[in-house]
Image (tube, rainbow, N blue to C red; front, side, top):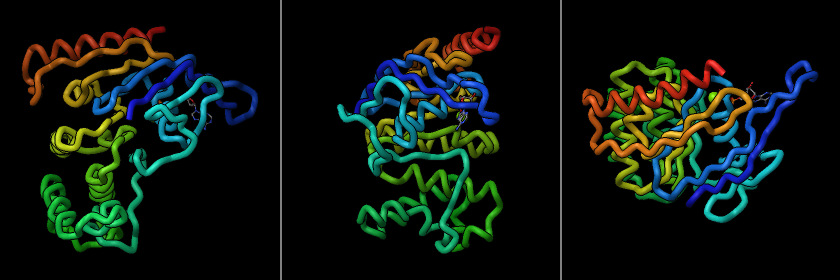
Length: 252
Ligand SMILES: Nc1ncnc2c1ncn2[C@@H]1O[C@H](COP(=O)(O)OP(=O)(O)O)[C@@H](O)[C@H]1O
Ligand SMILES: [Mg+2]
């Protein structure tokens, strides 16, 4: 699964119907199979739009999005998508919500449960496995929804600021879980975030978008050795370098 995005542009009509909003302009980007790629950039620069085009929820006005050589024409089970809002199935308990996708894919249930418990443990929710969504706080539901998408075995995972509302500790745990899941399963992950430090921790590559109209400003290779350590100079230098690019584009 390699994404090839060629000359992609996408515009919207503003809510009052009077203005044309250019969300993406002439985007060219190739994402190799198995890479962990982060999109960063100022709010409104088209990150979500590009992710939605890659999933097949929407289509470009110009240009093409290909996945594994094929034009993306609709969503696919091979591409998991994590939305900014988190919906669980109200009639299933936490554990069954988490393993829903694995059950659909016909995976052995006991194995799936074991896997689910590992993730639930990591985010402090083991004791809530048999609770139903209405018995959970908003933050708990969010963690369950995140785990559900991570443990599904889609070849590609498209994630739109999935951890942005979590407390730092939980966020760091989930980042580690996500990285180890990715390394085990050789998936391609596209991860949108506002947080450059998060991008530096997770990614093989960071794509920096510029302000509207959304264009790609720069693509960074992230060669920091894994496992990553946020406290090293190397790490902080890289974060600063990428952050400078984003600040600049905000001044445009
Ligand atoms: N359905 C839509 N209708 C009108 N404008 C939209 C729509 N979706 C996105 N936009 C506009 O397109 C631009 C890019 O949006 P988006 O991709 O959500 O940016 P980001 O995720 O980087 O914050 C923004 O100006 C946004 O207001
Ligand atoms: Mg967005």
